[in-house]
Image (cartoon, rainbow, N blue to C red):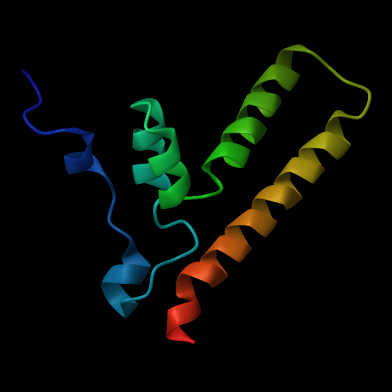
Length: 99
């Protein structure tokens, strides 16, 4: 059984956008991930600017499961805080026309 459409046909809808008409902090993550794996790196960044810092955090956490570092907890917290800042700033910029 072959899949007719692309992976876009199976993406989840944003409940916040459906109910309230306002995008959430994670809107664009799925589409940016698909763009990233298709090699459209600039488009992925424009879709969701935190995509690269999230991928970096995930890669570090997975790598840290096998290799332990002296300051691994501090690195994870730093990467997590970096993600939070990027997500919040990009969300505020995206929503600025509505303020």
